[in-house]
Length: 76
Image (cartoon, rainbow, N blue to C red; front, side):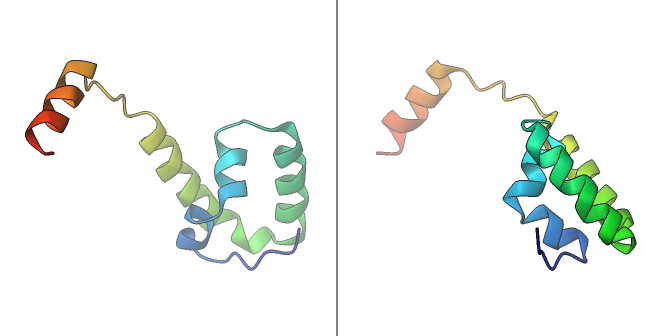
């Protein structure tokens, strides 16, 4: 995995990093372990991005189907 990731924004924009953070793939966990081993200086920025991603993932969407239908009726 040759990636040029140095800043928090770089990690936030990387789909593989999102998959790794959200725990959807054991393969990604292995890839990122190797990446951080080779690029330990990026770990602090990656941790910031991880906190942001996990924070956003914890928000629950409470919008009901009725609200969505009403929005479509009034905005189409």
